[in-house]
Structure formats: C-alpha cells, structure tokens
Length: 258
Image 1: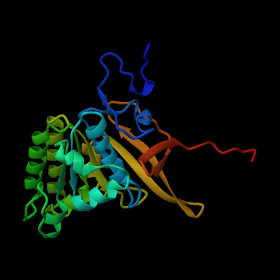
Image 2: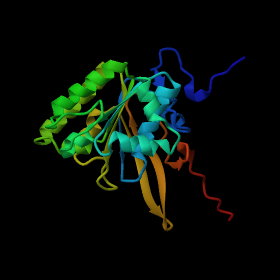
Image 3: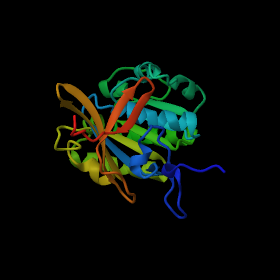
Image 4: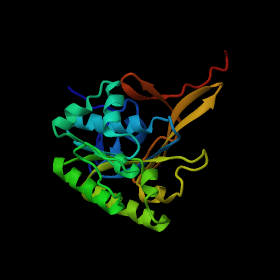
C-alpha cells in the first residue's frame, strides 16, 4: 500500500501546504509553506535568495501545476533566463506555455526601455506596479509569486510610511488572490533582517539565508525565524547550491573523538 512521506502528511483540518521543490526545505517548515501566505526571505548578497525563490517558482510551474509570477527589480528577465538556464531551468518554455510571467521592473527603475512583454512602464510608480502584479497573476491564474527585491521598491517611496502602506497593499493583494508568495530583502547587517523592519511585521514567515566566513571560506546556511500559525525547525541548516539548484542539509554534529 502506498504511504505518504511524513513531511507531506496532512492531518484532518490542518492548514494546506505547498511543496517548495527545494530538497530538504519542506521538512524544516513542518511539511511545506502554508498556502496563500506571504513569506520574507532575507539575506546578504550571494546568500542564494534569487535561486531559492526562483526554484520555488519554477518547481511550482513545472512540477506541481501552480503557475507563477516573478517580479525582478535587480536583473533583467533576459539575464534571469540565462542564469537559471545554467541550472537546467528553461524559463522561456514556461513563459511560452503561459505557466510563468517575468515582470521587468528593473528597466523602468533605472529609466531605460525594455522589449519584454510584461514590463513596468515609466515613470516608475508603486501603485502602477501593484496593478501590474495583480493583472499578471489574474492572467495566468498564478498560485505563486516572488518580488525580488523590496529594497528597490523602497527607493521609490516618498517616505517610510508610504513604503509601509505599499507592503501592506502588496500583501493584501497576494493573499486575496490566494498566492503563496515570497518577498526578498537584503539584510543590512548580521543583526537586522531588513533595513527598516517594516517587512517583518506584515509577513507570515521569516526565512534568513546566511553567507558567513568560517575557517577562511564562505559557508551558506538557512534559518527559519518565524512561521505564523505553524511549527518549524529552530535548527540552523546548511544550504548547498548545486548544478541542479538549492538543497538544504543538516549540519552534522562535531565528532569530539577526532
């Protein structure tokens, strides 16, 4: 008789969860991210935030029947297609199949033209971006969304209050459309998860990717800080970037007999 893995087992009346498609990750969030919630991914440059988030989107569209929308503020969609192609992820195929939309917010942000179909038009306005996100999600019935990254959006807010209202509106739109979403931020230092702390209070979960110098080499790790309405692991785990994407692994205990 077929048995389900413990990670994906659903108890009666338990919240519905989504498969991340990231090996080892679902086990540390009690079987997967809660469906329809918004999660913050924080980390320093090079920690793996974009690969982690794109793997979540790509896996949803290619393996789990959940279309995705990815908003890119930093890289152009063409650069994302090339970079992710090195991991064997054919983003263009998913776009052609209407399973994925890449929204180009990078070109408008820096004031250049774009040949992309889905592009935020100049002049860059936060409310216009929210409208573009809403329309794109509705167009393909997306169930997953990523905003990469919020720091760039903050630069276009008049003040902190406007930025806070923008995040609240964004979170409300994503939840109203029942999207399981990831909002990416850069951690300014090892003591703070975001620049202003606003994002941490309007999201349902916080996941931190670390990229620290240990014994003269850089080591990546992952930590789940908060998942509202769900249990999660409190252990630090290794985060390994392979030629197939990200894998989450347990950090072995030291052998004191060595």
